[in-house]
Image (cartoon, rainbow, N blue to C red; front, side, top):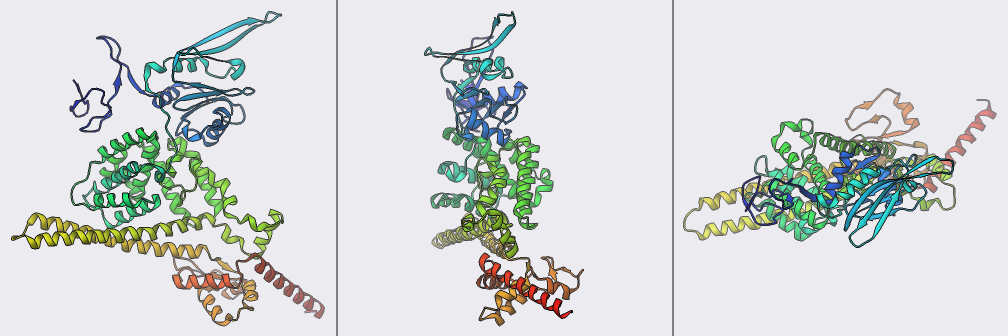
Length: 616
């Protein structure tokens, strides 16, 4: 009879997890007394450990594989295989990273030299792997040594690789030893996806993921506060949880009884991920990021909160990884709060991508619940993809229509319409957030209706009872308190939505209005008098920031001649009206703006000539 080493519970033969506490049971070979007990593991775990412990130059293991190396290795070494399946790389390339060497998945390894085609070596069925050195001599007596690895299979197939194919830098001895010991240490050959989005996974995984989040939110005080509820619902809208899952989760999060312990839910989640062939490292890191995101006010002192520390320990997240995640969350806030333009966002995300692997955080984990940039831009390519994708995805290239790109950019700049394009990523992020907050209100309304029905049921039961049922009364009071929290979260969502909408309108309006171009365009507007009043209520001759502090360092009269500045404290209605007016008169239209600018330039030239000839 076997017993769980964690809780002492009796185990059935062949059990992989303890049914009582969820502890993972190591599978060992049947051995005689006195023999060495060898704990077997999955092929992915075995390969990762061997690569990490090898100390060989050029070795990297997920999640610490450089992105360029990973993509090159997937294409050139692994025969254009899915990058999300690669778990380790031995990079022997001198110049272009990841183009020669070895690329490992959980089921096979690919090797390639500089001038040879790639060779695939499957793990299943290997009976022998040997390293040898073949020696020969030239006609002049020069000794030539060729390193060789021969892999034999139980079916009779033989694969040979040597240093003439792969170069002398390839670690042949290590490679042979890794394959030779494969059957000895591996109990299951499997390959898991290292880059997924939660929305694409099974309902069971999604439900367990959110149950773990709910259990965590209740772990400090037994309830979900209005602020926590808002964060939870917003996360659900990011993942676009189905109605069926939302209903199941509603019962779970609004129930007055106790939920499953966080640790048990994580063990169940790992088991489900294992069954589905999904990397639990990626999913658990994503869960840690979401948990930290829900505790933004505590990030600077996160170690002081035991329930937060305990949850991150269960997820096996190191301090170094936590530091990176906190840095990532603060960077996301900076995109909005500091109003970073696309170039600044690209620089920031490239910097984060560079340090992610060093911290041991998978870039794929940042996209599991759409956490890369608001709307989940990028999958496995993650953060670094933003730098190269920004221009291609945000500029309306179809509008170029035969003109050179540099000419198009020049016209945009001259016409004053390029400013908004610089904020494309921020606008995209704000748009996604507005959509999520709108969807969150739908969830909250459904939750309130569910709670009202539950309270009505409690009241009906109490009326049917001859005497006051204290237990029923306590349960109803808990439900009422939970309903109040849900209602308050609706107010928080509405407040956040208004603030996001305000920021969105600011991002879609020029900070400084070109008064000459504006006047030229407005002159053709039949409603120019009233529309000008609206614009002049939003745009002032002095720069007033969101903090209400005016920049009075310059003469207002001079500033008015140079341009008008947006008053960031204007209300939503005024900003929206200003946007509509500018759009209607063609302020953002390239053709209209260029024509207006041309007329302004012509008038200035005419005035200059008149002044010159008049001697003024």
